[in-house]
Amino acid sequence: MTAQLAYPGTDKYSMAEFMAILLARQAGGDGETTGGGGANQVVSLGGNRLAQITVAPDLWLFTGGAGVYNGKFDTLPLGTWDPRLNHGAECKIFIADVVDGGTRGHDAGGSGRLRRAGSGGFGGIQVDKFGNVNMIGIGPHPKLKVRGPGTVGTIWMGSGSANVFVEHHNKRIFVEKCDYVSGAGWLEGGDSRHKTLNGRDGPEYVWSPICVLDFTEVEHRARIASVHPGYTAADVVANTGFELVVPDHVPTTTPPSDFELHTLRTQVDRAGVLRKRRVTVGF
Image (cartoon, rainbow, N blue to C red; front, side, top):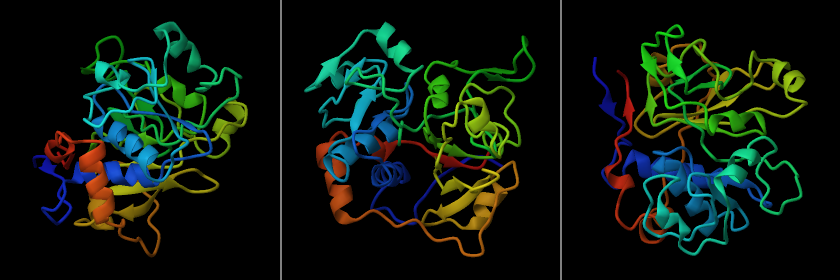
């Protein structure tokens, strides 16, 4: 079996565009600070910029690689390091301050107040049933079968209830237990995270090319919240390497509106990066 391009059942928009719109809808507000994902996560970067323009104008968009807050780009940068993020930015900080900020949560105002990293979309080469993320590698140390990009960024998941975002949905990514944990989800489930991290909540959502997962209220196990157009709950189960909680009724994720799609293409991604983005399902 080979990986297939995730297809939303229409040629009107790509699945990557749909995912960016979905992230924008579920972005936080009230002065929350969010990120653009990792070095190559243009979907979450585009989604959070779209949120600022539409549903969350007071959202703080932080891009750590560039050290920039609230860049006003309308052509989607290729990652959080892209110098185009400097355009129209409200401020820029040193990389040492970027790293230090991860230990206390992002706080552009300098008050030290922990802010929820709402829809930042931390990714992973492995994600387990409690939303823990592995970006270190696969296989026994020191002879890893696959070496990941490392822990920078994902370690901040311990500072607040940052969500998880992946561009591919298959059993190699969604595993029963991560080989290593570089980003803390709900740890071992139950109240383990609250006990370990001073009561701080874990992720609320996991976004993938075929579904949205949330977490059960007590065990904090991954549960199907909705499936994207073109897919079913059975498709999600078949491509996930751990047992999901499946409600009796699983809704279909609401497709993009004409307004959302027009705004994304004209004010965030004029070059059409997301229209060509490859997101997949299966091996």
